Image (cartoon, rainbow, N blue to C red; front, side):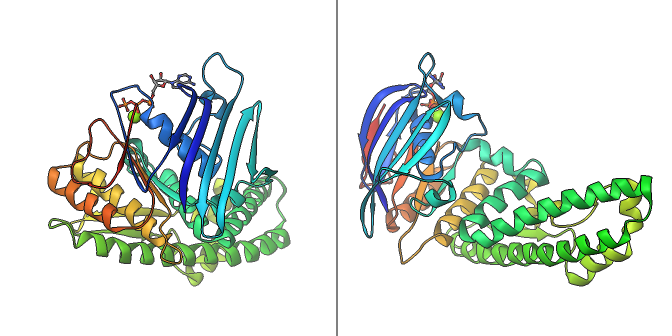
Length: 345
Ligand SMILES: Nc1ncnc2c1ncn2[C@@H]1O[C@H](COP(=O)(O)OP(=O)(O)OP(=O)(O)O)[C@@H](O)[C@H]1O
Ligand SMILES: [Mg+2]
């Protein structure tokens, strides 16, 4: 799929602009001209929310009451229109028809995005790494998303009971029922995460072979590794949870680490290496999301910053060899990419 045409009104610093796009698009211009904002509009069109963790109202152009974006998207079955408007509340329409759930949008215009602060995000807390991976896995499996929601709700109920236990005492039966449920969905989440990381690592290997230095993989560190440990923790070692009044272990405590040259990248990787690691993850997700030989959209904010020429060249070749639509922001043109549309802001 490809965005052919985009109209944006009152979105960030843009008042009323129209853009037409090719397969590879370089959004170029000096600082503060709106490169990231344009990329954000494209992301918004495919997801119904911004890639930056902000309130939707912050996107509305200062001093105006609403924003509007409309994209004409070419898909296998033909052209579709996606419209998103915001004035106090958000309305999303596909071919003029209002949709109820954002998830309906994601399948129409799948995309992956790299942006500089994603590096800090992924190198910060386990919570943020989980947030990122859960969101990505949910793009592949709606069941995973539903299981996650179910797990979180069960966990909340369990924690309430654990707290009440301290006051009231006997609520064993209730806890038994919840724990049986929680183990059932919890193990599905763990298995899916493990399977996903395996697939991701296979893609990462394909890309790392192109780079000479790289011995890189993602490692899954589950808080409970299998069903036996799960049962033991939830049934047999409840006392400790009760003492504390919350559930100490489970998929809500899982983490992922980035292993570079056999060491934890969190502690040892250089700035450029960190960026490359995150780009490799994004490129791998891009490949994993490929359906019927068609790549999803790839969005990269500040492509060349912090990378040496050799890395930019290899990544540029990868982009040229693919068949998905690509949007890259950069202060300068990227000479390694030959066939492209330059959008100067
Ligand atoms: N809601 C808004 N209304 C009006 N202007 C806004 C709004 N939000 C952000 N801006 C402005 O948009 C401008 C462009 O921001 P953007 O981040 O897209 O620049 P950029 O071209 O990516 O720059 P850089 O090269 O520094 O990354 C900024 O000057 C910012 O003040
Ligand atoms: Mg920017």
